[in-house]
Image 1: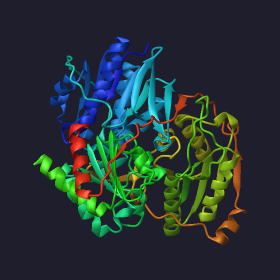
Image 2: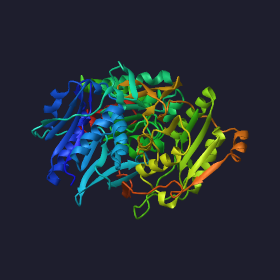
Image 3: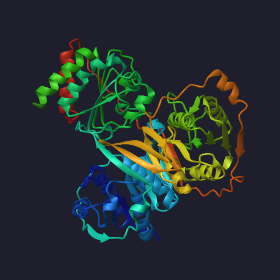
Image 4: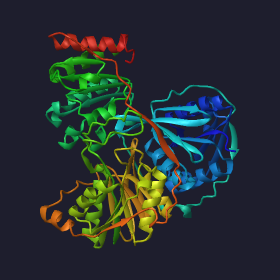
Length: 325
Length: 256
């Protein structure tokens, strides 16, 4: 019988990503409830040293394949190796991060393992011994509770939603033969171009300052950027601003952009079209600045200022600077 | 080139989504149905590729009778023909089952490259493209913002958190389209007229030899959690109001 709550740990450039600890913590809670162990799959080159960190966040056993074939990430190598070790050990539950690479890997695994998965979950629990995973659908306009009848029961978990909690376990190393060689890689990574801006991606940002149609033009985003700098935030934009060509597509928050869940979302000159709200409603706190008192964004905002954003935003920057100085 | 574009019909992004009282699904009445926006990028890329390298574009859709309208849209944009998979047994099919049906239909035709949207904006699962690739035993390029196909290879740009990957794949492969890949064309009036005469082949589960074994299901749907009503900061002076919000963020919300 299937047993064990497993995760696939995500590392980049030899460091575990924060979301790996989040999903390990979520797995630990369910494993305790089921009376089972937490296993983690760790792939990479020179990554065995990361094992104790996973132990710290509640992982009992870490299944490691340390091989240059796993650097950089490719779907082909990772999916083959994870599928192999999962089939050999038959865990009942398998979590991955709903990060960009986690989405690529988890979805291929759904095919390889011929099972089902709940994507981008915000809540996981056990009911009658089975995983029940809650996830936004229609970009958060509704939520669905998903039950997976295939095995393992897979779910990808949204970054920034589950708390990473220390809960030290053995973190025992179990090496396995991934059975993968360079010849198995049909889609190869030719180049990794790093973003040198040092900005945190919107999907991982703790604070986001977004500008919409009310910004009136690309030249006015400096006031958004100044506020973001003071708060250590990432800049986002509404679809209207992106479609007008004011901001790059990668900045778009919404149903056809990025779905975000920061601690604080500051919406400036954003009316709150339903497709935008869908992308940011799971933010923990929302501040809205808009001169239209009837803008739908105010129905979602924790704090609202009805006024001209060109007067308010620089004052927010000034006040935040004073506070944080 | 034999190019395939998988297309799904979904509620428009501006649609208000209401959960049925029994939580079994959404109320479909009054919804405006459109082509999934990410699939539109896939269709556009398929057409651009055909215009560059020659060949034809086959649209493959799984969906009820109403999905025919979306198929006609893709044909009006310039695709040559379509396969419409429709079967009550496939209504609300999970990702694995959907991909199995698409794979069964695509296996019967020649294909060099297959486009899907990176996710459909209804269930937001984003699984079908990858599972389809696995079932066909071919590589996948997911969430792609730039694509070049030449010398029998596909080169794609994939943005990830804090970086971009340049990936090269052998053909055939599945490409899942992300916003930014292109600007989809509108169907022209002559295109719309011509689309009416283009062939659409109907298939059901039996014709595809599908045995349907669900792997996941939506057990219950609920409306999003209510947010407590917020506070509008009153006053005339923007500086005073801004300072008050910053104070609240520190002292009440405790997040800065």
